[in-house]
Amino acid sequence: MPLVNIHTHHQQPGGSIQLINHLLQHAFPEHSDASYSSGLHPWHIRDTDSNALLEKLELLAAQNQIMAIGECGLDRTIETPLQLQEELFIQQVELAERYQKPLILHVVKSYPDIIRIKKSRKSSIPWILHAYQGNQQTTQQLLAHDFYFSFGTQLLRKPQKLQNSLRQIPLEKLFFETDDSTEKIETIYIFAAQILGLTVTALQELVFNNYQRIFGND
Ligand SMILES: [Zn+2]
Image (cartoon, rainbow, N blue to C red; front, side):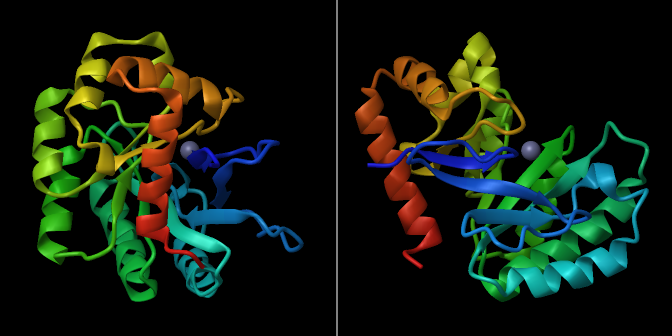
């Protein structure tokens, strides 16, 4: 049973299933048979020609290798006006809906915004919050709107807040990731399994089932 790493910036050796993050402003690796997500990150909106990049995303999204759209989303801690971020985010949501691919979301201090947008779209695709760090109350609100949650290296420091959030989430909504760290995905599963009181194998199987349910077999 392969370990699923739903978001990584570095292809890792071994038999895990991994969605490698492709930044839209970079060339797409031509001779790779790996799986990717691709999107326009809110941090990269300013210094690039966003419309041209979204046209590029449209072409990429049609490929089977692009399993998800993202990371994309909203970040209230950066200077880029939220309105512009939101405009470009919504275009990516529309694209993900058109190609029926899940979203990998970067959301910082803008959970109410993301809930508002998801609500207004009645989206049928999965919305996966990457590097999730919300508290219990936020988690409750997000659960009511059917989000998925991916936990990363933040778990390794075992903050109580994050442990509580993790325990609160139904297992069928869970994913794990290494993001831009060089940590092994195995380590994240070991910590998460301990917090959840499960064996690593059981957790691995649960997340693999989540992956199959959401991403299908193609
Ligand atoms: Zn990332």
